[in-house]
Amino acid sequence: MKKIAIVGAGPGGLTAAMVLAKRGYEVEVFEKESVVGGRNAELRLGDFRFDIGPTFLMMKFVLDKAFKEAGVDGDKLLDFRRLDPMYRLIFEKFSMDVSSDSEQMKREIARCFPGEEDGLELFMQAEEKRFQHIYACLEKDYSSIADFFKPTFLRALRYIPFGRSIFDYLGNYFNSEKLRLAFTFQSKYLGMSAWECPGFFVILPYIEHAFGIFHVQGGLSEISRVMAEVAERNGAKIHLNAKVEELILVRGAVKGVRLEDGREVLADETILNADFAHAMETLVPKGVLKKYAPEKLKKLKYSCSTFMLYLGLNKTFDDLPHHNIIFAKDYRENTEDIFKRLKLSEDISFYVRNASLTDESLAPKGKSAIYVLVPVPNQGSGIDWEKEKAGFREMVLDAIATRTSAGDLRPHIEVERVITPAAWASSGVYQGATFNLAHTMTQMLYFRPRNKFEELDNCYLVGGGTHPGSGLPTIYHSGLIAANMITERDRKPE
Image 1 (cartoon, rainbow, N blue to C red):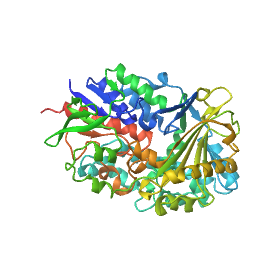
Image 2 (image 1 turned 90 degrees about the vertical axis):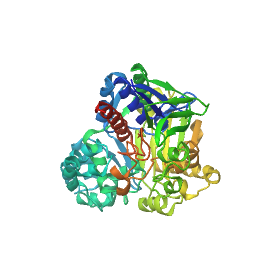
Image 3 (image 1 turned 30 degrees about the vertical axis):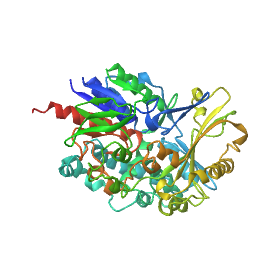
């Protein structure tokens, strides 16, 4: 029975752990924190519960597949609630409730953008074909350049809008800039600007409208908790408070891990679920890497970061929907500040989740757990967050008071946690880039760090820094891809 060591109990590592353990491998997972989940973990502040990172699930069928491969039915272990409307988009002078019900969505477009409602049907019909071809590419690994010449990718080529951004491409269906934003803000899921994010990712809004989005009762962190339980039930061992100090290398092959306490754990294969660039910089002995040496990591393109507020409040907000996306008055200028000028905007875009509206388990009765996310430049900007933190917090709270129905939250705050890009960076997120490597065409598929890592033998990558990319569903895919590659390799005759 071969042994697998997994560094990190994030969603990608847990996916691989529960699947490989089910297939009979001896699996040990080493997590530096006291809880599983990584950025998909739970944050508890007194009696209030928050998701640290992802707050809704799309492409639920990917998670269903992962649980099935692990031998369980996820619907029997977790309570999924489909949300409709999916979210409210708040512009300067009006708001729009976005629905995955096509007829309701057409009525909402007609209300907000008269005459543009027929574009929705054109969008859904055309993008269904694109999704079918591109999704097949995301399920495969890209270990060699030859993978580009396999039938799956060749069939998808004509559906990839090379040289066009997602914002430009939505002009095929909608004229209004704000209506296009309603279908392109999803580029922020990747930490990218809608004017720079490749048109390839037009599949994201299609996926939301075609399959809907889900909340998990108890928070999305429940997925990681249940994954860990399934992995252990299948025979895996998960070690918490077990920080990996370094990979053990013998002639370019990973032979296991060395823990911070000095223990060495040998393994036939090692899976890295740590932040990619941080892992390359800290876990691999100096002088080993060439393609991803520290000086070359600095030259790669990274996503934006996020300024986070987790607020436990002593009142409820029945008029504030579960998900709210508030656009800056000049959204493009705000985006340019984040991605090009690398400065803080006074006119911000932000996201507010009022999950207590749907899920009473997150806060005591009569109270709310409010989650606020503001896209900001990553640490490559040089912004001094010790200096900016307090003032920026006040500006965010002012924006919530004036741009949403929640009003001034300050008098109602019982508990609070703030996470800045500097805090993300100190926790092991390279440059505080919370969505990992940017998803440019030169950093995707074969050109992204590969699931079977190209610089070290017996080493596999999962998580947002490898193929297929960041976001919960694609991270689950990375765990499945790594597990399948290891299994297929072991099935081949020597």
